[in-house]
Amino acid sequence: MLLVEVCCNALRSTTEHADSYPLQQLLYETMINKIIPTVAAADKQKWTDAAKQWRLPFWDWAIPQSDTKKFGFPNIILGANVTILDQTSTNGATKTVVNPLNKFTNTVDGTKVPMGDTATMKQFAIDYKVKDSNGSAQVRYPTS
Image (cartoon, rainbow, N blue to C red; front, side, top):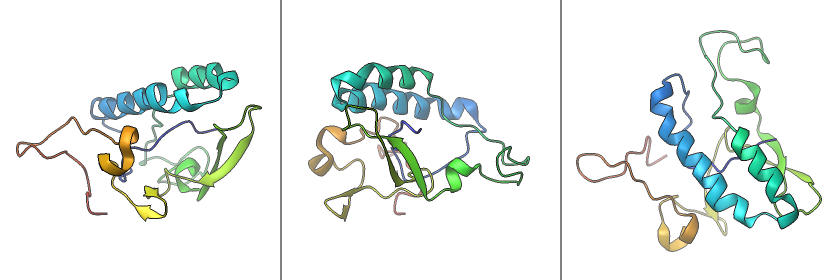
């Protein structure tokens, strides 16, 4: 199962562990502070336990992957769909969704919306705290 809210439209390998820590922390805080509060009360503990065990996936693209036996990405990245817990369910049901690790497009009511658009995203907008020397958020491929 995958418990993650994808926060950017750029997939990157976490071979630079120190560089990946801020992303891991952002994802963890998003799970704890934004996703879990919306889960049915009966399932909150299960989701909290999962969030505490969650780690940003790591793979070494320079060696064959254990699941595919090929160089490159593991299957969790390659699959077009993924099965997740349905956060609206009170009985632990799952649902299949488009895999955000494979390709993610943030949409609201069918319209593409940047994650930092506070007017549209409201409490779910990402407040990019890391700024470059010009005061702009540091985002890879911001127009993709």
